[in-house]
Length: 434
Ligand code: PMP
Image (cartoon, rainbow, N blue to C red; front, side, top):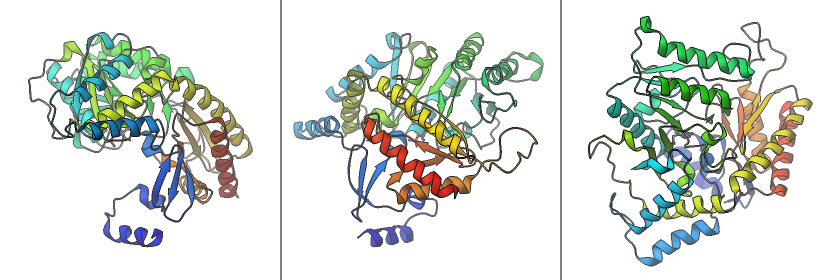
């Protein structure tokens, strides 16, 4: 079955398919961290549906929540009508929101993907401010629909200004650390301050507290606070894209809690649906002046996703899984740094909580600019990914050059599983570096 399914899907599916190219496996069963393939092999899944599976695959509380809805004969599809299932989800979601937002939050259900919620957030701030430009940051990833794409890294679009996101390892100013972050903040400030620049005041600023697809770049807390100050001083709503960082992944329930800032808008998806499609925008009530019908969509009312999401949010909160992700992630980062000591091709190890990135470089080549870290080594990262798969470990690549191996294990990862993941990864790196 394994070979046949792979062959048929390669023939029938789009040339643009992504994960299936690098990961030629056929998952048929899964529990927690583990996926079983049609070939009978077992894999440790550190891709977790691109960070969606906060509790891993088929967690009992999630399955039970889905079964309860099915057994109750509640309607599975009623557009955005009020239901007890939605009421429970909203109650649990609001319980988790950062103070300062929770007391005055409004939610718009979008659907069904993260990119839809990004679109809604951009539309919301444009309607609320009557302005059109948006500030986004280099290396960002916000989705694949037009507005979200504009705000993401590679695209060029006049309505979106892209300002430097602070990066320690590949600092755009070549200094890194706090100084690099401060310079990045000052550029944003002067962009908005300069009356002669002809720059229109933007409708909003959208930021990932930790860039995921961009190669796992955690924003320094002081920079997040400065961005908050600058946006507030110019009455520009700040949108936190927590599609990937949310629900405990980075060590706090929402990643904005590290810096203590309160964004005006939060974009949430992935883990909030407990492995089923769900996306929402949460925002301060004073922005809630868009007319009825401003944002619609047939699949905003996914009852199964809301039930699975309620169970996931509650389980993460009640079991303090965010804290667990923080301590376990810090320990794993420490161990990975010693991997970097052994292998010069490991240029950088970084992350926050269980959002971890390992950047591969060509240690013997010079940076084309004459200074700074060695050039990225995407081929080597791809070999590491393949060697991981051979050892039964699923990892994802990211970063502008696809040179960053990313780990996004479930928050339920045990100490023993963490050891197994790091052992397999270390073996894979050793094999790839040979
Ligand atoms: N924002 C961020 C930060 C993301 O990581 C992603 C997906 N990787 C998206 C938005 C888009 O979500 P989706 O793929 O569900 O449209």
